[in-house]
Picture 1: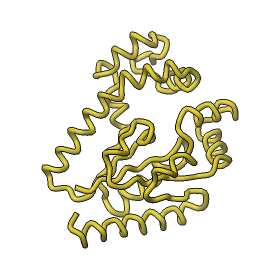
Picture 2: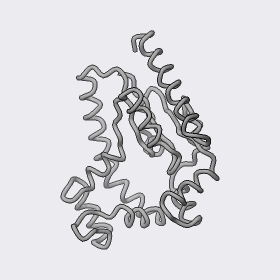
Picture 3: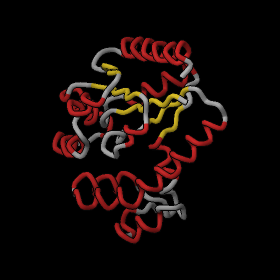
Picture 4: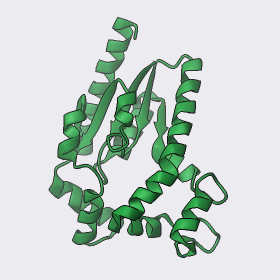
Length: 205
């Protein structure tokens, strides 16, 4: 089974690329953002540990974790971010490994791991290729401010909580430049997928 790690930075457009892969090719994608939400819903695996550490102020009225409130804390405090990662990452990895094992049993030829923290968590060592969705810093800041309705300062804090896109370029097999139009991004995604698919087919990987 050939595994591609799809990553980027906050507001770089990784979700758009993932959607293109699903719509154009019905690609098999394990979305680790979705897994992270699954393990932090009320009464799930990481929920109790998170509440015990961060307190009940991060909860909605229905008892679910308010991800924006939690995010504001961890983006401003490295120790809090580290603690959240200690609670969640090993659980996410366990689910990822189970789903990869199941995909192998199903004779899946090509699968994507969609993760914003692919490099930070060293999960890039588990893949055959790394696809990086790239934008320049100015575009990233602007899109993040608009998307989340936050200040310039808050946008910088969130971006700096991750490895920079410039640093992530060093790990990338394929770079999807998302600075321009959606159509240009789509063309790159389609071309990159076809190139990899042909590689797998021709070499029987």
